[in-house]
Length: 467
Image 1 (cartoon, one colour):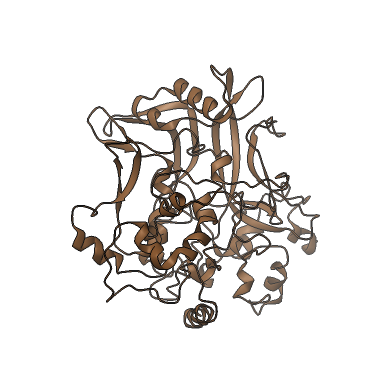
Image 2 (cartoon, rainbow, N blue to C red):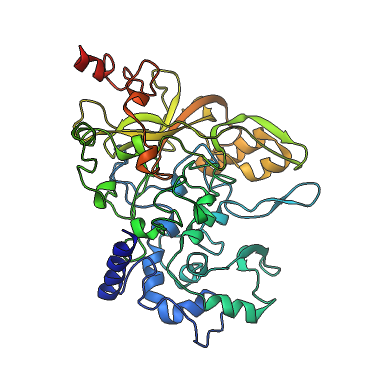
């Protein structure tokens, strides 16, 4: 399958001259490359930079047709709230150190494919030169945060720039399509640490075996991320249930693009494919190497004596059994600046999958159910993001909430309460070999993993067939 996928990708590149990398020739080896920053890349690749400027990886927002209450608004990290680092508005860039002088945080821009400036709607030369091409296209590339002595502005620079130009030029010649390692160095560390956020995207995947992930196993398919997620013009395919914007609206990525609709050769199992997503049976657990953040309580600062820093109180779990919900590909999102109302169980939803048993377009999917505790303005009812960077140093949660309320809503001295939040995150990686998939009794037994009543059944549907 890997060889066929690679051939198809090569044919696409040759035919269109455009993939995630956006050019036919992916190596600068042998060229006289003297790297002086993104301007060096723009000499030959300005059109690719312009395409990337409009992508979600740069803008951190995009079209949101799958958010049922988006009302046509472009949504993404820049203008939505989450229960991890909450929002970039008050946390974009800068260095926070503890009393020992150890660096604790550099802001949300550390995860952005730019060199420090916030993405803007208008495409300018300054914005194009802010793109960090090497973060996705150069193996061995590393960068660090520096403060410009003249302007006092913070900016990301390659650590070899100005120190070892020969080494810098050598790295700039090692240009390729994004490899699995390149993608994972950002995506596996989202949320503040290894596997904190997603749960099913671990750095172990750089070099794993079949039992960890059958697609990425170095002894098996050895697939790169772009073999599923590559679009054209620097757009990335695929949208999890908790992502607001999409690079490819209307182009939903599913297992059936590579696998048959009846893949099992067993009629009863193939019947399940109509209403049960592949992830349910083929990802029995996630967070198999590094534990993942399952609950993040910002109302209770936690002191870490050895590291000399503070964090929210986080509950980690390993080998997590997914939560199961119906999902039709659409999601309801609690938007910032709109009154948050409690669900029936008293929690406040942030990202909630749409669908039900009665919805024929929905299937049961596997999810990470992340729980949080966030501030909510008593009068306005808005959920409040926080200025978390300084909080890591001093643990002053009151100041963190004030900074977030000011940055998001222009509100000073907020009157707020703490509320419990829930967010469902789709689980799509760490797929097991068929031999390790769930069996019938894992779900259809008195102590099975499915909550049938919550899924809209009066009882286990197998019992009805037996009766």
